[in-house]
Figure 1: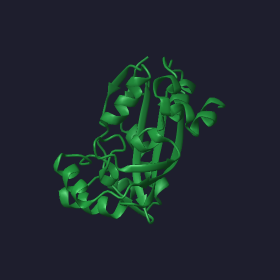
Figure 2: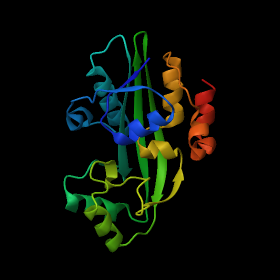
Figure 3: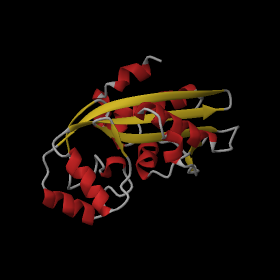
Length: 209
């Protein structure tokens, strides 16, 4: 059974493909800002993920939708509007701890599951030259907070408290458990796919469901 991915994110596609899942891409066309306006970050993220899932008219299929935001001092940092906006975000995040929130929705013919995962991320004290080189390379243009945890050679993250894959855009243990509960065969265990997933704090929570 293919999973319909209601997202254009190459990071989510990469993570799910690594589990051996067959995906059908169907990016949802919604006004994310309008859906999230006036809501607390976690509520807004879940509302956007639910709206993405609802926008896909595939009632007989399993649909996975997700949304990720970066939160610094209570303010949501979305995708940068331009290069200067990206530099502003990266300067604000430098050497500080922020929160990354990802909401996941799995809709199946008989049920709909939702989850919201949180990770606390501390960035390293990168310099202005690092920022300029990263932005000039196109890094972070389509990412919340203007950075990707996996991006080399920038390597913006110093430490994480929580799920690494959550920061990348999809908490893999959580998504895997939700898909399995929806009747999808997940060929590979996250811990056998990525070494980092073996120590993920979401591992026990997901496998005990």
